Length: 470
Image (cartoon, rainbow, N blue to C red; front, side, top):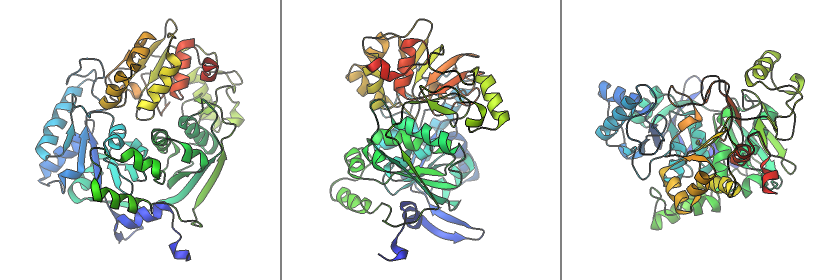
C-alpha cells in the first residue's frame, strides 16, 4: 500500500465531502443532513424565511421537539419554561411551512435528536450531519462525521448544503481489554476525560477504536461518542462494522433492496487504513476499570466509585478551580464519595436513555425501592424507547420502585428556566455534564452510569451497583 493510500477514517470522510479549499486554511464541506430542535430550530427557519432564502433540499432536513417540551404525562404545547410554548408553536409552524420532516410533540417518532436520528436511520455511515446542539457528535457512532453548530451556521447549511470548516487534526483513542461486569461505555468516557482533561481533544477529530470498543453494542457506542464534546473534540466517531449494518437495516430512512446492498458495500471501506498516521494517539487498558463517577464541576473531575475525592495535586484542576469545585459540591478532599447522602436520581438524556440503558437499570431495580427522601425520575430518550420499554414492562419496574416515569425529551439534563432540582440538592445523574447549576440553580450533580444512578437511588447515598447486583 502506498503512503498516499494510508488514510485515517476521518481523512476519508473529509475528502468525500470536500467541495472546495478556501483561503485561510478553511474548506467548504458538503452537509448531508441538518437536524433542528425547538430551542433553536424556529430561529434558523424564521431567519431564512425573512431573508427570502429557500431551503436547498427540505428532504434532508429534520426537526424534533426535545429540549423545551414538557415530559410530564399528558403533555401538550405548554411547558414549565417561561415562554417555552412559543418556541414549540413557532418551530412547528416554521417546519411545516418549510416542508421539512417534523417529529412533533405527540408524534410516534418524537424524541431527543441524538436518540431518534440513529433510531430512524437518519444518520448513516459516511454522512455528514449537523445540528445546533453540542452533543451531535453522538451520531459519529454510526461512522458519520457529526458535529454541533450554531443557529447562524444552521441557516447556511439549510440554504446552501455546505459549511465552512477548518480541518481538525486527527486523534485515535484505543480502549483495549475486556470490560468487567457492571462497567459501561459511560465509564470509558469518564476515564478518558479524567485522564487527559476536558480540553484533551481540543482541535481534534477523535476516532474511538480498540477491542473494548469493538465489543460494545451500538447503543453503548452512541454513549461513548456522546461525550466527545466533554473532551472538547470537534467530533467523535467509530468505524462502522457488521453491528452497525445490522442495527440500521430496515429502519425508516435507510436505503432498501439493491440500494441497501450497494450502500453496505461502500460503507465497508469506511475504516482507517493499516499504517495510517494520527496527529495524536492514546492507548488505554480498561481491564481493571471500575465504575466511574464525577466528584466536582467538570467531567474531568471523575474517579472510580471506590476512590476518595482527590487532593488538589491529583485532581487535574488548577488550585482555584479545585477549591471552587470542592466548595460548590460540598465534598471533602481525601474522603470517599461512596456513602454520601443524595436527594435525587435521574436516568435520561442523549447520553443514557436508550432501551438498553433502561433494561440494565430495571434489572437492578426489580424488587427494590428508592430510599425515603430521594426523588427519582426516568425519562426515556424517545417515544419509541418509551413504547418498547412499556411493552417489556420496564415502566412498571421503575414505577413500582418509586421512580417517576416520563414522556421522552431532554428534561432535567439541563436547566433552562423550567423544571429543575433544588438548590444544594445532590443528584446522581446519567447525563453528560456536571457544571454548576446544570440541573437547577445551585444543584450538585454527580454524573455516572444508569447502574450507579439506580443503585444510589435505592441506597439513598452514592453506591456501587456491583454490590447491589452481587
